[in-house]
Image (cartoon, rainbow, N blue to C red; front, side, top):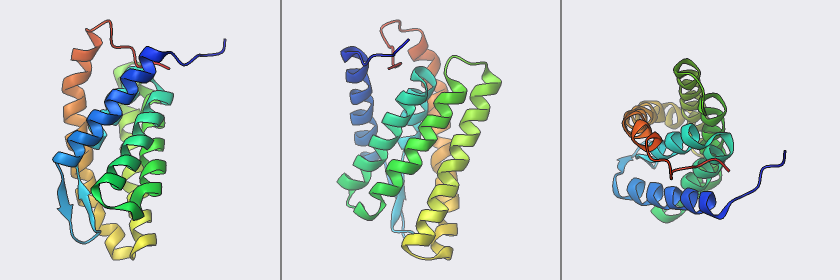
Length: 167
């Protein structure tokens, strides 16, 4: 059965992207070694992926990462963020959507590893290997903050029947 895009779900995903970018833009901690920053973008990606599946995670992850870097003045990271956060959301959604907690945990761990390793490689490509490795601690903190926020909010959103992120 072919899945269709529904206006309501697309609108909700667009709102999540907008809220995710705004929140991440406001709450950011600079990381001088990589000319980047730590933010809360993972929270929105994890929420969209767990509640909406792989496609929703891919869309929210990729667009949130790209738009955040563009608006925050880090255009050199935009394409990397589109790919890295998009893959992260895809994997979390694939393993986590309507699955048991063990599968969700596997998805969250794999998605987090993709993000951390992806930014090590991107940092090394943009700057050098020491800069890439310097991003690990900041990205680990970013993932942990996102996990905490998502794990608090996902059960709340699951109780709201109008929240349907599957597209």
